[in-house]
Every structure is written in structure tokens, then in C-alpha cells.
Amino acid sequence: MTTLLHIDSSVLPGEASSSRSVADAFRKAWEEQHPEGRVIHRDLAADPVPHITAAAWSAGFTDPSERTPEQAAAFGERVRLMEELERADAVLIGAPMHNYSIPSTLKAWLDNVFLLGRTAGEAPSAQGTPVVVVASRGGSYAPGTPREGFEFVQNYLEVVLQGALGLDVEFIVPELTMAPSNPAMSELIPLYEVSRERAFRDATAKAKALAERLAA
Ligand SMILES: Cc1cc2nc3c(=O)[nH]c(=O)nc-3n(C[C@H](O)[C@H](O)[C@H](O)COP(=O)(O)O)c2cc1C
Image (cartoon, rainbow, N blue to C red; front, side, top):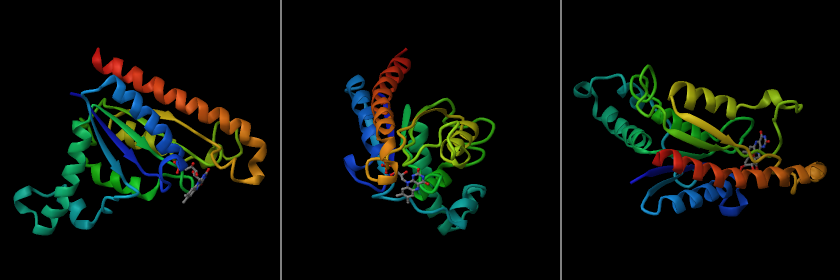
């Protein structure tokens, strides 16, 4: 049985959110390929994980027999999140751009699952797991655009997910999502529409390609 870990972090509900909508298209195509499969859905906006604390962090480097009750309790939640990642056959992450970077709820999840010597380091425990990130953004930060240097979503997630956790990361980037609601961006609506259509197409195609890859 294949397991997809699906993480959303948009503050917007349902179809109002580009990342949720595109991730849903991926998930539907995935479920068609894996009717017997399991999807674990974490909605970090509705149900945020705790910010990392001194106890939760230091517990990761303390022998279990020497942990304080506070460290043991805090670490228990981290282990639950790490195991979810480690047991997943594939991961789907909605990562909208918030002030040039990822939502703080997604950062909190990363701070919990990132543990040197386990999920990160020389032999990361989830190494090679495919991850599709839906990186929605109101503007465009594509190469050659004026704000190219302000992009800290893909750049950051590539370093953390691929570089440190050893995951196999691909991005889908619905961009210019603010064009329909921001009069100053009205000329960009056709580009927004192209980007949106491509994102939905990519989501379906990547879900199918991944299913084939995992079945091989
Ligand atoms: C708190 C917040 C900060 C944002 N900051 C940016 C930003 O820096 N750059 C940008 O292009 N869009 C920004 N936006 C717009 C979102 O990236 C855009 O609405 C995108 O579609 C969000 O994905 P979602 O629709 O899945 O929520 C911001 C939105 C919010 C709520």
C-alpha cells in the first residue's frame, strides 16, 4: 500500500487557495492511480504543529534515558512528524509565498522534522523520497523578472528538502495569482491564466509519472 503525505499551509480555504487547488488536482490523480493507497493530510493552517522549543530541540541530542519529562513529551511530537515523513512513499507540499519565503507554519513543521543524525546528515532517513512542492505566489520571481533575487521559497526548500533531508524535489509554480484581484496587475492576467493552467496540467502529469515510477 502506498502512502502519500499531503501537507497544506495556505491560509486561504479550498478553491480560494491556488496551492490547495493545485495540490488537490495532484492528489485526485494520485488517488486514481492508487485506489488502495493511503493519504495522510496535514493542514498546517488549520492545525499548526508547535514551534520548536529548547526542550524539543535538545531532546534530539540527549540519550533517551537522560531526557527530562519535558524533553520526552516535546520529542514525542517530533518523532510522530518524523515518522510520518519516513513512512511516506511520496510527499506533496503546498508552499505559498509569504513575504518572499514560506509560511511560518511550514517552517515550524520543518524545524520539527529536521534532525541531524536522523532525517538530516550523512544518511537521511527519508533519502530519495519524491516530493512535489506547489509553490504559489502572488507575483512572479522567475529568472529575468525584476524580483528574481527575492525568491526564498524554491531556493530555501531546495536547500532544506533536497540538500539536507535528501528528498527528491520537484516544483510546480502557479504564479501571478494576485493578478485578477490587483488592478495594478491587470495586464498580467493572461500570464496568470497560462501559469494556472500549466500548474494543473503539471499536477496531474506529475502524479501519474510518480505512480508509474513507484510501481516500477
Ligand atoms: C501573509 C502573506 C504574505 C504574502 N507575501 C507575498 C510575497 O512576498 N510575494 C508574493 O508574490 N505574494 C505574496 N503573497 C500572496 C500569495 O503568495 C498568493 O496569494 C498565493 O496565491 C498564495 O498561495 P495560496 O493561494 O495557496 O494561499 C502573500 C500572501 C500572504 C497571505
